[in-house]
Image (cartoon, rainbow, N blue to C red; front, top):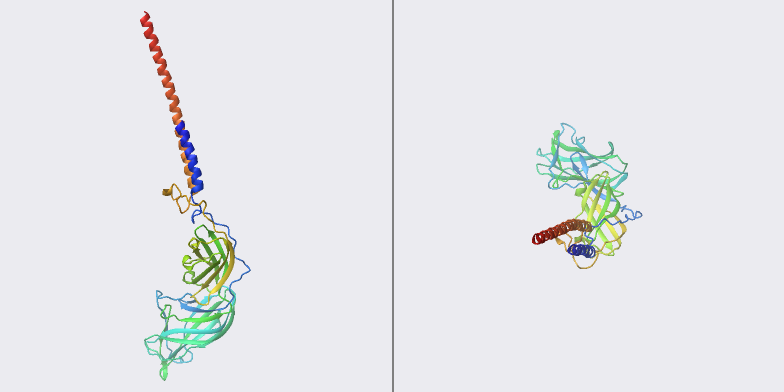
Length: 389
């Protein structure tokens, strides 16, 4: 029983040592710290942006074509008569506008084409529509072309207001002169959809089509913290192809190399991007931080938003020491007090059971010893009686 009491005291002492000594605050073990959201009085950057809308499938999109995108083409038929001025309509490409906006300012068009038929004085007429209504037309340069692709360009100014749900449509018309002064015109191919033939329309927005709506710090631990920015893109670009930037300054300034690559995701009609700052590498301290986030389609004309947050960074508990249970992941990088508590309770229960079993065995042993002594006394009495007889 004395050994059992000593063991019980040792277990209690072990629990107290682990409670004091095991370091707290690893990135995974700490609950998220409650951090206020960004200052809503600080609005997103309202500067305009020059955005290139690339032809893709039957749409114009801000998503930049890459070398992995397959080349697309549309045949541009020649006409028997009138192709020089009337031309052949080859298609319309559209984007649905997801918010009220104004396109106003310079406009520039780049189109790629080729003609194995050797089209004479080929070119394009670009008709710009708002929800199906023609608002303006532009003409590219004209030149003779052959099998090697050639870029055609057009420029001018444009001003048009769009409401949510309107479409911005780009219609292309193929133009070419008769092959021999009179008669049929030459045919060709309009090329688009990859990095080499990146046919596009560049337009200027009065307000940036990307609005960063909120910046928060949803998760803070002793090793890292997450910064999340929500944004709404009225042109519906692919979040995974966009360019993102972030700076964190204040009580401690984040070293860019200590901020992980952004993780973008779509969230219904909006999108979000999250960065993880390994602030432990910068020995960050609690305080007021200024966070600036930038989002753009191609790294140019970036939409930005800045906010200030008071961030409380957890610190480790108890200096030095170290866990005596490293094999359970309770060592120098942080402890798991719930696991420790469960382990201690299990040990105490086991010890209690062992103590009960030992106690019962002790009682049985005493009874057996007493019985043996009684049997010996009876034998001695019988021997004495026999001697008397």
